[in-house]
Length: 90
Image (tube, rainbow, N blue to C red; front, side, top):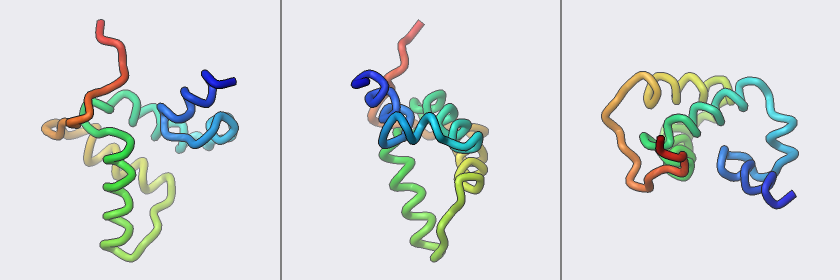
């Protein structure tokens, strides 16, 4: 149970049940965050989204967050997270 909780935290969910009940967009965003953690850390991503929402006076949907992440971090290179990443190196 502790391993499930830890895994959920690593991919951006507060608890295992949130991960299990996540929508397809939430799961896709979690997958992309994991695969691109060398570009942006979960905490950086959260701060980035808060800044976008506050700066524009909006609340982004999960689908919109997925679009933002895909266009800003997945498709473009150049940003590098100073926090490193948890993935195993081959």
